[in-house]
Amino acid sequence: MVYFEKMLNFFLSILTILRAHSQKLKLIMQTKTTKISTGKLTEAMVERFKIDGFLLVEDFFSHEELDRFGSEVDKAVRYRTVDDNRSHGDKNLYEQTFVQCMGLWEDNAPLRPLTFHQKLCATAADLLETDCVRLWQDQALYKEAGGRKTDAHLDYPFWPVDKPRLVSAWIPFDGCKLGGGAMGYVQGSHKLGICRFVDIGHLKDEEPYDILKDTQVSSRPLVWIEAPKGSVIFHHALTIHTADANRTNKTRRVFTTVYMADGCRRTRDDFSVYLDRDGIKKGDLIAGPGLPVAWPRDEKQLPKPPSVLGPKTGFGLAD
Ligand SMILES: O=C(O)CCC(=O)C(=O)O
Image 1 (cartoon, protein in one colour):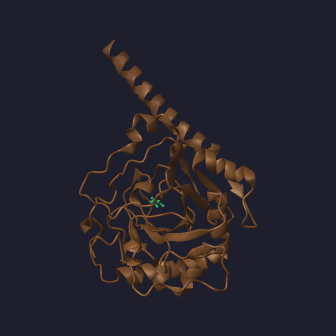
Image 2: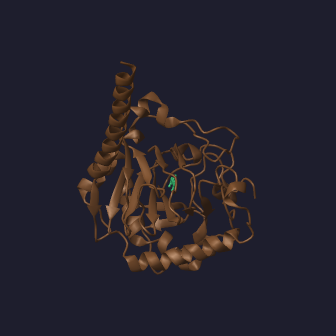
Image 3: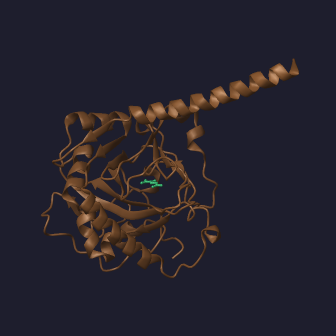
């Protein structure tokens, strides 16, 4: 009898694992993938984004463009981190998530055409349903081999902006598969009214709160996306997202840009490196050399970088 119960429990646990896997696969397969060639999204794509809070757009960049920009970002990250000889294990928990280098457009002229890529900026404007967007930030997020998962969070609470009118573009130079630092998004979470700050950077020395366990959040599908090379994933500033650990032996090379609808104002006076640098105070309109108009603009007239550079790595609190 005991033997029979043990066998039954064993089969039940196998069944549970298989169910979880098939659910995960089903979600990946259900993910809406879209193709664009002109830089303008279809209405259906914008609608999808409005419902899900994220959108995978395939064949956005040519492989040639990605290889060219990818090697420029590699160079820029190497330059920013050249003095850092620590092993992966010696870094703090946040640094073990990825190597983060922000504001790369500022000190790397060959990267400016990527950050201000007109198709990218026009797509951000389409998704925000506005006719003018500013650059909020760009950054490399290089998740090294063995890099830990990115703790689930939403971006908006990090940013002292009066409206959540920001959209991120996540650009994997080599594509990205599950097990290699792939992104997962909680479908429709941008509409839940959740704006909790999750301290993924241990900025306030707090353990990150597991927002995925929040009852409102856990009842919604967490959609894992495998992004083929050439694709871009866009997400809304209120969408809860995470990335899996990098269990491959290669760095996950990702570049992200964030665009903000023009006309937003600063809401808080707490530390914000780019707003402080441009002298933008609480209540002021957000505009300045470090936050230039990204769309519409003349493709040949890329913005000039601000005279003071931002932090080399991380958020700039430790620099
Ligand atoms: O790339 C990752 O691991 C996380 C990306 C992310 O959090 C973001 O783009 O907002």
